[in-house]
Image 1 (cartoon, rainbow, N blue to C red):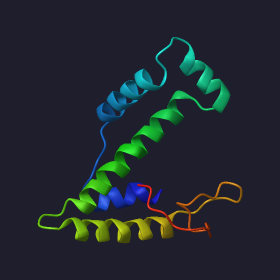
Image 2: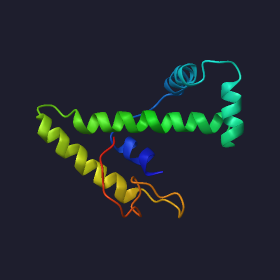
Image 3: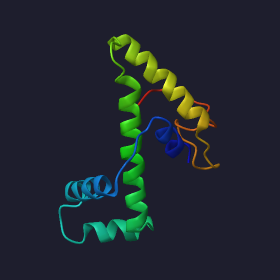
Length: 116
């Protein structure tokens, strides 16, 4: 996945401890009642490993985006431009299968919105 490579190029890492903490926090918020998480997994066909990987990618992308716009001395407008340029690069590297195309895929042909 290009996100892993891009993060590495920027010297960013996500530790297992960070993933576990975010995963636990997220699950407490999303599934406050006992048994809700198991129902969710059954409904989606996912397992705990899938969820942990999604959390890792989410943390990685958040760190990467923060680094892109956190360069010292950039004005808000420059940060916005840097984010827009990064977003275009992100889309160009993101390949989606037919039936799974969304605005973050290069196959997407609709209007581009920045929903980061």
